[in-house]
Image 1 (cartoon, rainbow, N blue to C red):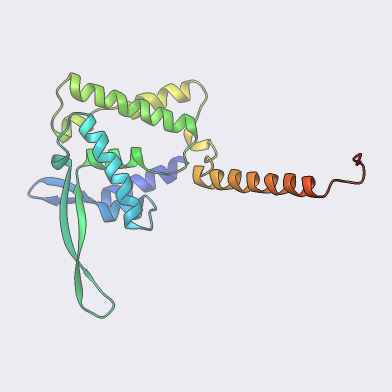
Image 2 (cartoon, rainbow, N blue to C red):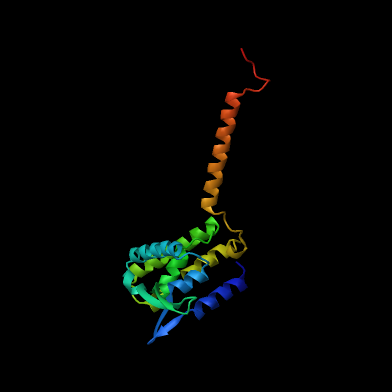
Length: 194
């Protein structure tokens, strides 16, 4: 991603912030849109991974992921209550870390490394509040490590979708199997036959 795209995404992220009696939070359905997920059920899988990461970091999941509901307008003019999740900044960070955005392997590993450093520091320094956790600058430090070695994540091409790659390999395997079967049934004229 180029710097201007990152800045725009960050600005949009901050625009989605809500404040209730001095408590800052984001709604998962807004974050779903920002991260490009079209289906709620797919996004919930990422949220579940983020909850596991939160728990593994020694944090109480309910402190960062709160089930809520909200009213939405329907085309008929009526309203319907839908499920949503109120998220802390840390929860949003974990969701972004666990999302499918087809990053190159080195970028994924760098993000994992930064996340592990944050988790380690949360346990080591007994960080328990969102401001303490937010002050962790591990993404910035890991990015500096990459750029010092001439690796600029925003300039790397996206990796291929693993599921698409798996489907292509399966299709190729089927095609090869068909070719082998056809060759076995109808040997070519060049082969010796008895």
